[in-house]
Image (tube, rainbow, N blue to C red; front, side, top):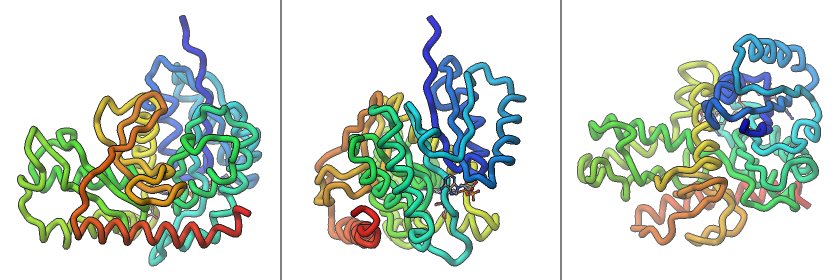
Length: 327
Ligand code: NAD
Ligand code: LMR
């Protein structure tokens, strides 16, 4: 029997990340080529012409799984009965800016969209926030949608996880998909803590294979943390294809399952690891059919505690800076 279609919203649908995202969703890279999808595409009124062009191209791909499209500038229409939402639409940073400098420009978008999700989305919807600063925007959307469970929301830290995995694979001389139990803690910002203390490849501890703690502290952590800025410097625009790829990876693992592998997701804290409830913090999880299980009780040494505190304090500051928007 044919599967019923899954409704997927993408905001910022005429932007550069969306241009690398919607074709992959429609091709089946997210849910498989036999799962029909209906795309709900949201962008601002002046972008509706460009959005029409994207839809023409989607039609011209003749994707068998693309069962329909809705284009709109109204968040409630975009989120009506959706199963999955990719909240991408927001301003990107330019050279010399930090992502949190975007809070002023972008925070309001996520109060409006959180309220619209509250009204219109399926109660089981799974919503990924990509627009920066992603963790705090996800916090805003979640708090603006009190009738949806906090479990409906996550922020994207998978790009950082993928960047870290790729760099580690190169350093250790192992295949990237051999790496297990890698963690990226905290905020999608330079304070994030990519942590391979628990990571393994081919049954060996990655830290033993690498055997170079100075590289970890002086090269690996800062390079992963500043990779977004390095891409902006090189490309003149923020990452798009790798961001879309990470969004697919994070949502596919979330709704389909990670099959026992640890993945990093920024989810609303349940209080574990001393993170105040509700802060969207990158943690290691396993996932199955939309359910996230946090990996508990990982040991922290002194350096890990310092890194953890740094990123947590930044997220607390960002939360306090937007508190006025949340009543
Ligand atoms: P872009 O400027 O190419 O596209 C953004 C799109 O969003 C535009 O079409 C714009 O019209 C639209 N938009 C703006 N406000 C909107 C609103 N209220 N409702 C609907 N659409 C709206 O930018 P991009 O390169 O696609 O990046 C989008 C966001 O993703 C930026 O904030 C960027 O910093 C962020 N980003 C996050 C990650 C991550 O890992 N979390 C990675 C890369 C980029
Ligand atoms: C990234 O990490 O590439 C994105 O968050 C874009 C940025 O501003 O760095």
